[in-house]
Every structure is written in structure tokens, then in C-alpha cells.
Image 1 (cartoon, rainbow, N blue to C red):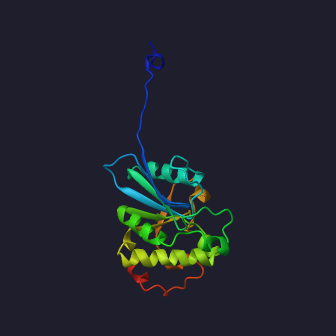
Image 2: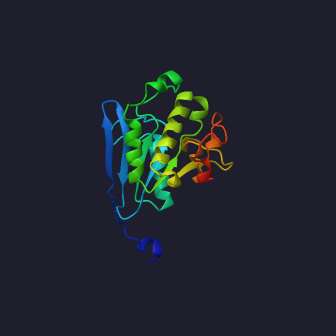
Image 3: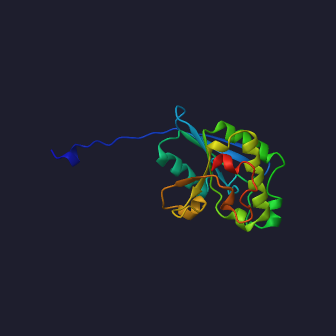
Length: 196
């Protein structure tokens, strides 16, 4: 008997616990846990594309797959700068795309995570509203002394990217830099020297 005919079929089974925090049209975060003995990573993207607990857009799939490929994490929290779906990200649409308590909820989720990866790409370069949200996020995590667990998702040139921009590449990271957005001037952020 050859090795090929000696192999037996088998079934593989996995359980993923999915939790979502939402209110009306606002989706604060979605958490997927597959191994409770390992740390949790939070990946911060731009805005949700789906609202259903079992629905997952391409960005969410890429995030989960990247977390699985790292083999370090037992779960991922997918959170967003904005809590409402946005079809075309303009300053006007983004200014109405988040709940009043969304930053508070984001900070709570960051506290639960062992690592936070900011994966928002160039949106803050193109939108003053997005830039203001990023600055608010940075200030909030700094106030909570969480800045050391924040990383940026970057491409091979070290430029911050969104998961869709590097969908066929392994994830790379950089420490948070306040100069990564064109409108933040070097030295503007009082905590910049503490994370360089």
C-alpha cells in the first residue's frame, strides 16, 4: 500500500466566539476569539462595512487572517475610527459617521487588547475629520498610558497602510510616529519623544 492510499480522511473543527458591540447604526467593535489562552490584538481600521454579527467584509477577513498568520494571538478586536458605514469618505460624510461615545468605547476596547495595530492608511492625509479623530485617539491612549502598545501597519517603504493596500503581503509594523500624517508637524505632539 502506498502512502497516498494509506491516508485517512478526517474532519477538522474550530470554534470562534464572535462578539459585537453596537447601538442602532453604530458598530463600535467586533471581537473574534479562537484561543482564550493567547493574547488579543486590536486592529483599528477606518469604518465598518457590514453590520451583521456573522457578516464580514474583505477588510475584516484580511485582519482576521493576518492575526491568525502571526500565530501570537488568540483573537482579534476589529474597531474603527468611525462607527457608521461610509460610502464615500468626505469631510461631510465622516463628520456624521461616529457616535458621541465612540472614542470612549474605542479606548475601553484598547484596554482589553494586549497590542493595538493602527491600520487606517492614508485617510487622515485626505480628510481633516479623520485627522482630528486620529489625534483624538492618540491623545486618549496617551492619557491612559497605552501608547507603548500602539503600532502602525506599514508597507515595505514604512508608509502607513490599510489592510486592503497590502492584501497579498505579510504585515509589517512601525512604532507610532506623529510625522506620518502630512498635517501633523514634528514636535507638535508632547508625547512624541516618549515613543521615538
